[in-house]
Length: 552
Image 1 (cartoon, rainbow, N blue to C red):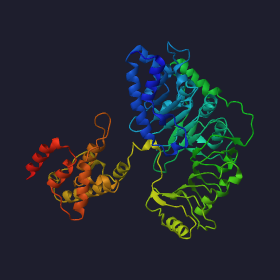
Image 2 (cartoon, helix red, strand yellow):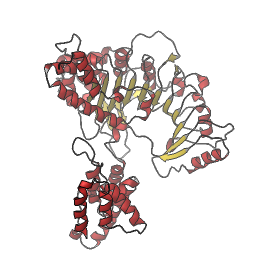
Image 3 (cartoon, one colour):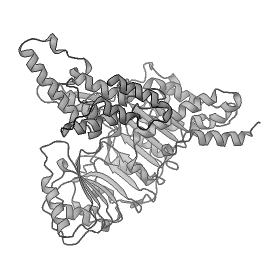
Image 4 (cartoon, helix red, strand yellow):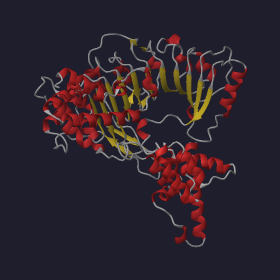
């Protein structure tokens, strides 16, 4: 049976669709970013495989192969750029016009990239933004190896986004690109379709020192104290020398974009309305400047704000009182003040290191607040005063809907989640990582070295145990940290079809056995075998009997 091309296209579309990849709804506030990327990469493998089946399948897949583009290695950018500018035989428009989402991850994980190349073409993301004029989602996360400082970013990038994406962009996620608040303002006012916006490494605009939309600095010096040489970032790319990556025509376009870029015409005066924006995250939220905006549908707001708390009031016109989720880091604001501005607030996150909390005086109940999360990086920032204050408010019936007070680390940027799992960070900082990489045999040690090594091994094991949930303790009974790490790898690393190896019941049974042992209830191998084989069909009865007899 031969299917019409339209039917075949619809079938392929549904079979390879990952709805979360193009999602811009408020649910992205709770998005598992890594899971979305993994899901799309699996889908992309299927698309590529189907495109190689036949010419018919290839023509069908051409529509979807470039719909989402994700880049993790800089060396692929020049080839991809050429591909996006090319035109397929069955089309009249460049392939880049089909791209709806562009993700760029550089310096993430253990994948290096030439950081100096940033100054050659980073101000247009090496031509990728102009090559994709129908972008709906742009994610750019660039990590420098030097202290994770943001890149010295030319303002041509913000102008390029405003020019190329103003009519289409619905989600903007930027991390590692330094941008001043006045340029955030100038860029956002053009992006009227925007629904979700997250910009890291925003710096404050100081009207006493800065000139509005002035030229970018050519150099930034980061001091490291008297004993160390400062780190210097310089945007001084010499376009007269041959490029190591791009052809001369592309390089000339990079140069022209840096020298001749300009903001698109804008005639409307403040306040600027972004009618669809529901999620906003800015590292440095200049509340005085943001009063020039109006966000009528804003529901989720994450910000670091060191201005007066009064600027958050809905009476200022920018932030509506219908806000439901707020992450607030600021000064001289009590919890009662913060939630008082937002009567519909349900979730409040407070990074305790960056907040100064005067005593709260709850004069009016807050009917909607359900969760307060007190986020802390370090143990010496004690959240107990805030917890006590919240509990007093609950006792006085000022927080009738509150169901949870959670103490946790603040949400890290997703780009670091795979690079540094919490237990690995702890192990590296405490100097134990060598014990996980190579097995230590105490029989090879002598005298005091044995005692010293036993202590280090015990501390490393304790670090791991304190970093995991109870369900993982079944893998941590061995005293050697290397063996523990190996057990965790066997269970949680991918094995076959890209799936983790934790679907079986064996480790769950071992976990229950460990719990019984902890309360002095002994469990024999026979008990474990009985539990493991209890759910097997009758045809496995012989196998179960053999296992039991072998233990008798």
